[in-house]
Amino acid sequence: MNRLDGKVALISGAARGIGGETAELMAKAGAKVVVADVLDDRGRQTVAAIGAAGGQAAYAHLDVTSEADWTEAVALAIGKFGRLDILVNNAGVFIGKGIEEITLDEWNRLVGVNMTGVFLGTRLAAPALREAAKTSEHGSAIVNLASIAGIVGSQLDPLYSMTKGGVTLFTKSAALEFARKGYRIRVNSIHPGVIQTDMGEQTFVARAQRSGSNDTMRVRQNVTDTVPWGRLGVPMDIAKGIVFLASDDAGYMNGAGLVVDGGVTAA
Image 1 (cartoon, helix red, strand yellow):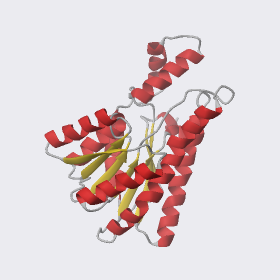
Image 2 (cartoon, helix red, strand yellow; image 1 turned 90 degrees about the vertical axis):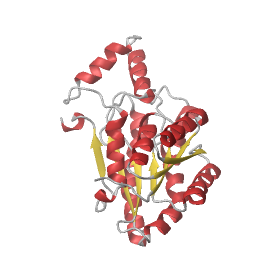
Image 3 (cartoon, helix red, strand yellow; image 1 turned 30 degrees about the vertical axis):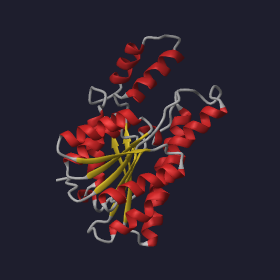
Image 4 (cartoon, one colour; image 1 turned 90 degrees about the horizontal axis):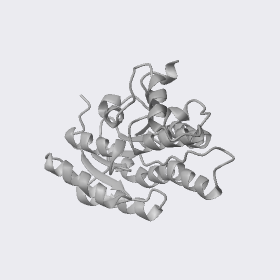
């Protein structure tokens, strides 16, 4: 189940956190992986860990707001591994400021990574994905990292929510456009709740500051108490969902959103 034998995957933001776990899990499932990030040392460490475990991986420096970086990353996948079957648009940033507090430069950075990066990755990887789909029974796959903040509104993080809502609808629209064109590229999104990563810690810090406190432990516990399953998510919870969406087991899923939040949005 969820095997990726013979597949080649390109993952943005793959040096650590959800992206890093996904890269290692995909390699264990049989994929050859291009680990792409701006954190070069951490990215190369992830590649080394995959190699030590018997997998195949390569590193690409990737600023997701750069067309040139995306072009080079896709070229690396094809040049080293011969094809590209899977794109995971994982890279993202969190800026814990409200509508009246955020600066225009901060807003542009938030949009640049969370939305422009997803658009550029999709556009520049599409030709390679379309070509690989010709020899795959279930076509190629794009998995976009959205969030439960892209499904429901957010009192505390409205602008982050706006960008992830954009990713949610872009996923559906890209799925429909590629289907109309006969590309056989499935496009789905995954929607994590609060996950214990560096970005997750940033949300705790931002919420603590807004409450006039530096007590991130209390904020973390308050957030945990809202999760029906009784714990915060960890990167592997999301990585497993991404691998599923990228695999042939999800071959009839297109334009869908997979929610992995411990039940938060069920309430």
